[in-house]
Length: 423
View 1 (cartoon, rainbow, N blue to C red):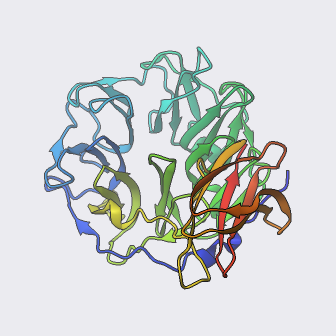
View 2: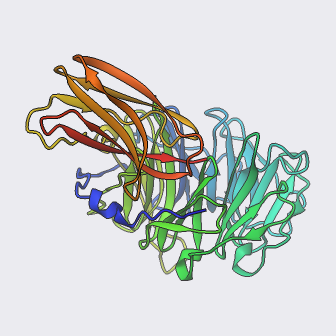
């Protein structure tokens, strides 16, 4: 499969997303923030030594919801089923709550209780419905949320036993799980029974993978030195950003798709995986470890190492609408007489819709090209009256990757947009 390079994307990053971050620290804690997630308007934050806190008013007030947790050194928290449900990974075990007060110890059978990941495993497997990733002990799986847990790290060794994140994807044709570790990326195609390291294109600090995300069979990884993607299960990793320390990534759903944040020592936002916009982190002390959103704000958590071993940090927010910025269509004409919208969905597997508008009658040509400038489809080549139009693009038979579609309506009205096929 031909790998597609994103190295040119820097050309589209000219506009920084400037706006001042507002500190909204937790009054009861100055500990470093290790992880965050949101459910609706509620935002939860895990800390390095002071437990778990939540806010229901965008950070104006924080409530300690550590309950009966016996260990307040939080490595990771996850949610998703309801506002009261949290999976907790601590330095001394895995815990689960449905009321933000009583936490069940779910560590039965673990031979390593320094847990980095505690969440879903593989829904197609009866023995690995739940998964735990540990700090040095590899992967554990269980059919039950509270265990007993069984070691399942065949094929993983060395630094790969430090498991930071697990993700996956399944459809009628493919089922895989992917683990991000301190020793690179490991794939399992047999419901977490065996693992294969696929790290072609990664080296050094790039092998320290902090977060993993899947869009179909496209896998995205945030590492200690770059942000990468693969379309072939790790046989080729291609840099979107070949340097920079990234600690977290977040998919933020919209009505027509998603937005993606990837952040750490530097940060970027993209509405389409094609155009990336740097996020200004000027004035933020420490390193950004985590990110979350509600309907109004983007929240980031930070941490700064301390000599005592317990990091310090805080939480900051910025209005969501100051970061979520669509890519404006560009026309070489000074008079806007045509409009070309981003295709929906994007990325897409086989079919997508392209909409455009004409503010006056004219002859319209709409064509699709591959990244080498070769025409792959002619969608419109006709005289059109003023109005709004929509055309379907069937990409069946085309290889996954980056493509361009160009609308030419005469009078120097020529607009180019980008799309991604991700099978």
